[in-house]
Length: 442
Image 1 (tube, one colour):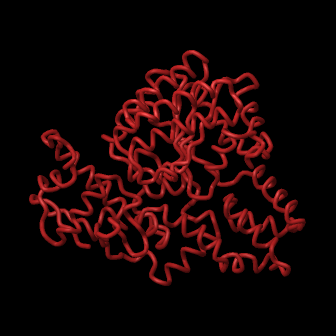
Image 2 (cartoon, rainbow, N blue to C red):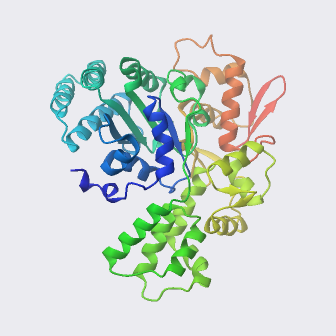
């Protein structure tokens, strides 16, 4: 069954060092965060763990009792907690069926019975029973692989992490989660949202290498085999250089060149690739994953904020203040000359309940509290907003806001500035009015 998955075809050394780092957390029964820019191969890594028996044996041994459950969180965007938990439960059941494990019958039965009640508490109780059965009775270690989790961030609630903690508490070191993200949960989420599960992931980072020669060689040979065409070693070497070794960019470049009868020579490759819409789209996705302040630093090649430089270096985009992906460097310069990266007006679209800055949908990058705050600010532009107004507007879902401190407000303001300002030290939108509150300029 697993051979139906493309990842099952890869050799067992694919993404070896990245998976080995993840394995060290999984073997110790803790959770981890897999972080990279879009297109670097996070989904491939998770797919290898879930669907490639050779890779599992290589890193965990032939008799390993670890069972991986791959969950694509892009499928539960804007869905309530009940639907998300149902999706996790179903994914676990389907993964057991796919590997033809005898435990599937029991888990599927629990899942189907609980669905009949259409009740969140009943469903989660059955989910807990399923985890108990797999981990305590059958001695399996369950590892959930949360792919594209950053897409679920705007909808995630503290109850989601409370549920994960409940499952982990029951199973102890037999329950782990790998969050696949474009930046750490600590920078994406407010501390209060993450607090229940934070101790299990704190400091557990695996930053994906942009280059992996084994996966590159496999992908290229696979494409050559199915197209019955070849790409010259010289041209391939130039592709790897221009793309910085980023998996998706290499794949797209090779597919484009293999489809062309007249291929460009190595000297003209860069300008040829940068003109291709598929390449432009992949590069734009990398741009969109960056905060305005990070985009601004790259465009202007000025890094006054050390934390921004550190992040860009950690994810492999930057080295010694030089962009490591030549095609991305050209993409940024081309857009910068057209005014890309300049301060854009921020607007709230009531019909779609979205907040945009130019063509960028900011609300896709905001937590629920950040979204409520920014929407409130947009509805009250130019006037001075006091702290108590911010508390009432942002934490309106709480029964009481008595425990919300000035520090919590300051943290939220800081987090929002990071996501909308080009320079958080010199904000253009969200201004502090000393002794009075804040003022917002759209």
